[in-house]
Amino acid sequence: MMTEKEDRVSADVAGLAAAVERVAADLAIAEEPAGFAQALEGEASPDQRRD
Amino acid sequence: MTDWTIQSLAREITARKISPVEATQACLERIARLDGRLHAFITVDADGALAAARALETELAAGRSRGPLHGVPLAYKDLCHVPGLPTSCGTKTREYFTSPVECTAAARLRDAGAVTLGKLNMTELAMGPFGDNAHHGDVHNPWRPGHCSGGSSSGSAAAVAAGFALATLGSDTGGSIRLPAACCGVVGLKPTYGRVSRAGAMPLSWSMDHLGPLARTVSDAALILEVVAGHDPHDATSSRRGVPYYQRLLDGPIAGLRVGVPENYYFDEIDPEMAAAVRAAADVLGGLGALVAPVRVPDPRTLSDIGNVIGRSESAALHTRLARERPHELQPAMRARLEIGFHISAHDYLQALRLRSRLAREFIAEVFAEVDALVVPVIPEPAPALEAVKAGSVDEFVARMGRFSRLTRPFNTLGLPALAVPCGFSSDGRPLALQIVGRAFDEATTLRLGHAYQRATTWHLEGPRL
Image (cartoon, each protein chain N blue to C red):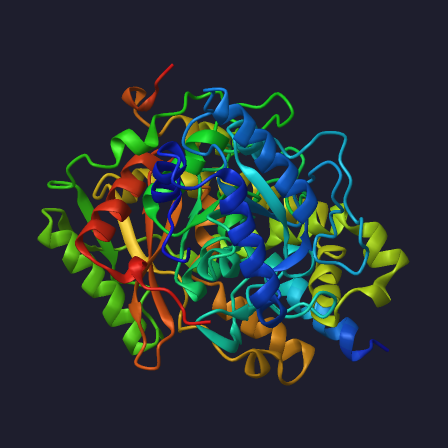
């Protein structure tokens, strides 16, 4: 028998897992976490650099 | 001294109208007189500050100036490791966080001539948006004691608003610089992920943490950013990209810049005065020549959910010992929030990290093809009463936390620069604020828009009566 606290944690975790599931279905195999830094670094224009 | 900005104080110090010691004493006296009501500081280092100020004064007398921060009193969120001072991170444990390296951002400011006044109060473990703290006292809003200062960099914002320090450092994992800045009527900048080193600062989530400045003006925030930004060998995530001279770029024209005002999500269920003030601020930018237009943005709820999976997982991993060995020391809401992270699967965490890359790429491609910056609210309502946000069950409290930070969290997931700027007051005198969000590593444009807004308005010149 789960306590009220365990129920709450389970519900929150299930909600987050469902959110991931909803958008992760079509992730390509090649997509990896390092793509995040690349997305940011590739965004700004070179003329913003000073060195 | 509540009228001081870094720039105005720097002019007076350069002109020898005021000395670093006098400026530091003025701040310390104000803290001693007023902080008993606000609780902005956890540690005031009066002796250390005065010793540093005297040394800087000697340098000036010898004709050596370190630049515009020479002798300027600053203070740091109590998650920055400053040698010789304890770092509680808002927990019950006086020295909760130790680091083999000094906080790089604070060290760079000190080397640039800043005086360290002390360490600032914060929400426990940087895990809440209201500024409440059962261990060190709730931080009260200088504009309206009894109301939230915002969090988690609560003391960082209150100290600037109250005139205790000229600027401060805060950290932002889900809005923790911008939320208190908005509540307290000061400027707060969350830079691009990787723009400012996090070395020597307590991590809450290594994927989502950012350090940044809080100050009276956008111009002062630009100056602080210029000093603290840039690669740091102690932080592998810090970018090697060069640092622009942000202050020199502030006065560039904003005519022709495309400013998007989202027509979905960001104005839903927002306090009417807040929404009107933010829209009016966008109109001011339009009056200065910016091309203001409505825009649709990818669903921010997905960004928040993905950010929550990442942030909760990492914070539980980082603070396992406290949560497992001394859970009774944590406030119930923080314990509840940490607990979730222990139950997220490795699969979901990794999928969330992979999704973050895609969502960031898509957001950048879709939104910044149409606009150069977004203007949105920071907080859904002006600073609420402390007792009101703390009332009820832990579940209700945690749910309020989520609602209050729902406008800032998406930009932590995206890692984009986001600037909170005061834009008025509610009919009962609580600060209102807008958020300007820019391209990755384009803090210069974000700051330029904020600076143009402040040159056209006077909200930032107001100060609370304490």
